[in-house]
Structures are given as C-alpha cells and as structure tokens.
Length: 248
Image (cartoon, rainbow, N blue to C red; front, side):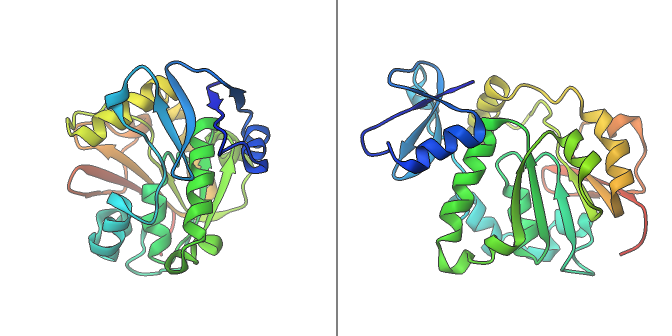
C-alpha cells in the first residue's frame, strides 16, 4: 500500500479516518508515489519525479469545471450515449470511476451516479474531492447525485441494486501525448496497474443495467469482450459503445 505522508498541519482526525477507511499507512519519510496534503487537498505525488506534478480530484476548478460550464452539456457524446438527452434523472453506476470526471459530467446533467473505485489510493482521492466539492455552494448537488463505493467493479456489479445505466471506462494504453494525459496515465499505470479483467465486466453489467451499458473506448480499440454494440457514439477523443437493453 502506498504510504501517506504526514505533515504537521495535516495530522488530524480526518487523516486518521482516511487511513482507516481506505487501508492507508502513515509514514514520516517517503520515496516514489505517495499521498500528501497540499493546500488542504489530498494529492498523489511522486517524490522522485518533482516535475511530475500533483494529481488530485478537483470538481470546482480546472478541466473538470470547464467541461461542466463549457463542454456542451447534454450535447456531449457521453450524455447522448447514456441517454441523458431524453431523460435526465437516470440512475447510473460508474463501475470504473477513476478520477471521477465522467461521473461528474453525468451528475451535472441530472443523473444520480454511484462511483465505484477498487483502488484505495484513487478512492481516497475521490473521497476527498467530493468532500471539498460539497463545501462549495454551486456544487451542493454533489451530496445527492454522487455516491462513492470503495469496491471492485465485479463485486459492485454483482451485488448492487438495479440501475438504469452501467458505465464502464476500463483503462487502456493511451496514444494521446498531451502533458495531462501523460502525467495521469503514468501515475495510473504505476499505482493502479492495468484492467486485465475488463472483458469480464460486460456480462454482469448487461445483467444489472435496466436500460443500457455504455463502454468508453479509444477510437482505435476493439469492442469490449469482442461483443458488437447496438450502436456507437463518437466523441472528440473517444468512442462510446452502447449496448441497449431497453429504450429510455
């Protein structure tokens, strides 16, 4: 497990809570990837790569906020793929939540989203991002529309109550060479590893989803589990394969 760097200003009950909730360990000295506090936010940092920069979940600023305000809303490919152009109050289970950006867009459009993340480090980042986001007046709806579950995708798909849509975004080797993608993909491959069980998620997802399963894929990637979707919606940088169980 990655160590959690303690700092004088961060040794609080909340730090202890995160350690207990996500199985993190405290350390006074670290190397490589570790969790730390910066400006009262939980960040993922690499002590050996200072130019790497911190990775955090921030729903109130940066690319995530810009996407909410200027990304096109229901005209985004992900919204069309999930059926949010026809019905806004859908229940969606994001079984591979990652840093929560797609889940945030779906929730901002009115969906109730359950974010499932199995990696304890990423889950802790999500938990802290939601905590800070809920404290901002314009994002007060996060409390009702975004719920975090620290679990494997398989367990969540097998034990969760029925939802309208299951959303899958398994990690895939990226060809995008932008600085942001390179930074985050390096961290995710080092800390999280690869989604070797991604193909196995499609069958339970189809069983759980009442209306459709949406799988996010790079444009060059094949279909998940080699199963041809009902249709595909093409975005700027990705493709959304849609497996329809019933019309929304």
